[in-house]
Amino acid sequence: MRNSIQSVGQAYFSHKQLNGKSCGDIQNMLFTERGVNWNDYAPSVKRGVCARKVDDAWTLDDSIPIFHNDPDYINNLVYHKEANITEMETRLNKC
Picture 1 (cartoon, rainbow, N blue to C red):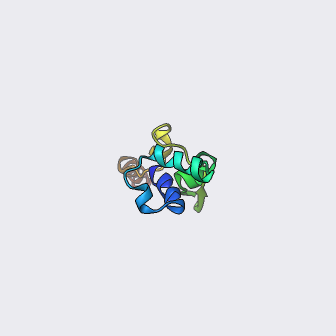
Picture 2: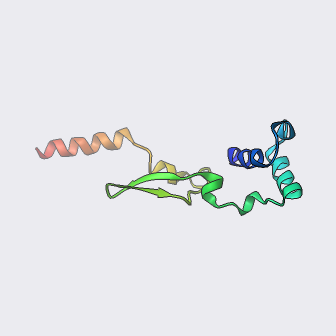
Picture 3: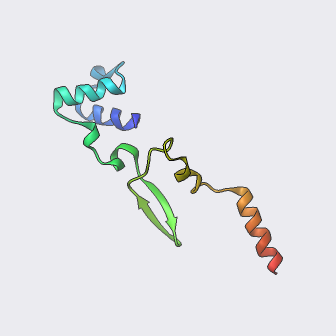
């Protein structure tokens, strides 16, 4: 989320104005000086988008969770070598 806050800040302020500022400082500047509330942005703008393959078709998930609050979201998408080996062994044994 840090990158998102900084990107919004860069759209409204110069590099010099943002230099040395924390994300909290940038959010405060956005709200007090420009009337922009970063919290009002859509989750896809704040956190990004995840491309997922579902039923052999790619879809975009634009409401991804905060990963440290929901680690299973990523863990379920990550390629697990051990699981794949077991699946391949099962297929080979059927031959």
